[in-house]
Length: 148
Image (tube, rainbow, N blue to C red; front, top):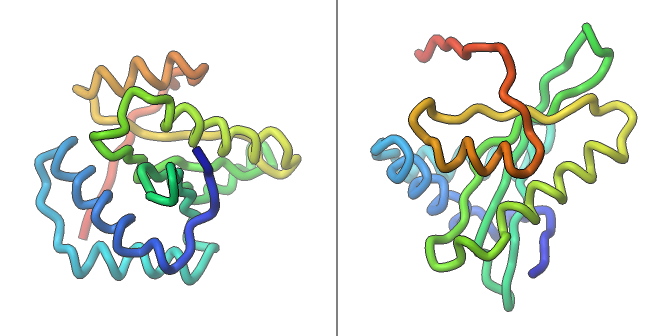
């Protein structure tokens, strides 16, 4: 198992995994062209976010992405984990746990990063249990959005 920063060569597998993620978790059918362009935008501009992928025998089997939130209260940056996906054939093998540990190590070793956050669907109890099992705590916020 190897975890590495994603490159532009990973754009299609990441886009495919994002498509799968939206359908499996929310039954949303995404526009592949839009998703591919969105992934490519991040891979070309790390100020938007950073993807890391997990490979087994040269095959990308999982991914994790984070974006940045500045906290004036903490004078530091939160990493917001997003677009987490593990190929169905490789689930239950510790891939997410290793991807998360990789990001947590980045957080723990950078004095300018004050923590990690993520959001999860209210009914996704499996994911919620997973996040608790790796040491994350539920916080006291609801998330609201305006989507254009």
